[in-house]
Length: 68
Image (cartoon, rainbow, N blue to C red; front, side, top):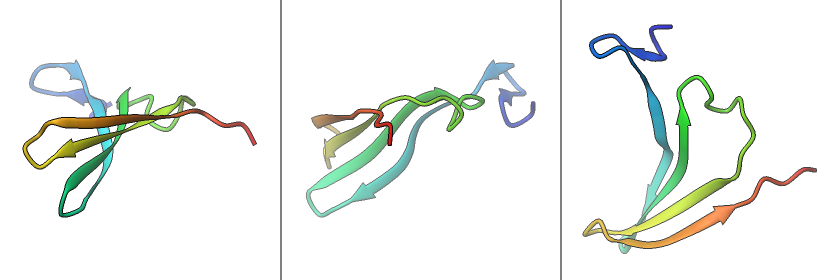
């Protein structure tokens, strides 16, 4: 339970981004937007957010869940 709950505030932790990559021009973030306990447990589509180095959102790409 310790990894799921912020002890100080007793609030469930939330993961927004699970991966970040950068280039000279942009910042790319894999957006999860899930609670810590749901991370990788519930299947859902993902998003890639693209930011400028000034923090402006340039694009959002929705990656649909694909069943193989």
